[in-house]
Length: 264
Image (cartoon, rainbow, N blue to C red; front, side, top):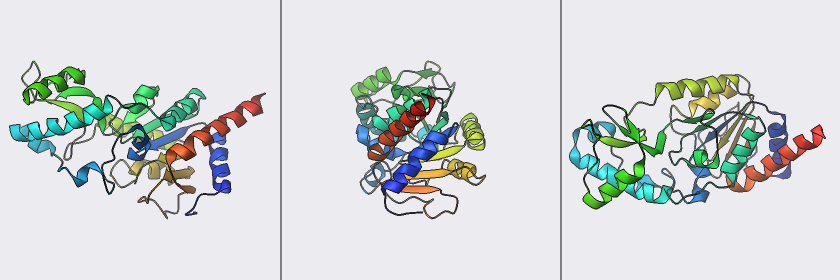
């Protein structure tokens, strides 16, 4: 596994994309930074200046709910103006070519949805900020009106049933959705290529799914600008260091052009 990018590595990436028919794409914060979304765990990430509100705190403390909604208001104002970038669109192009079996993401910004990734292949492991959900009755609603009301009153919104409302993301200490975990595991079982993009692969259980596929012999490609927890793992087929927006879109374009050329 190389530590620098070269033309041979780029050619290998294109060849793997061209050959694959059931790609599991796994995405992290590095995919969305080009859309103006700040990362969470980097040296200048969100958690360097904010303490996360844990789920049990949200459930039991009004002050914690205020803190949580204040943080989410900041995020919402960024997300509501963010647009998908060329990596999101490249993934949609792969799906359009019939090459995607799943897009498993840790991101909550909803940019895969906005780019056009089908909900049938999209697995948002950590939820989405594009919906608000009642923690009591599980009813969902559009977030905009709730954020506007909170901005005006600084009072955390409640559902008509009386339960606290919360953006439909997974908080620290909150269990992931069992259905999403099952869908990710099923995708890992059936993938013929795993492409991990813009993730440090340090968060469990999310980062276990690329390895689940790779350990059964599926080619595993990691593209990230910084170090990942899977670097040096024996099952990694190809490791490309660099900006995903500079590497992935041209590789997808080349792979699909080669595919079209083969058909003609």
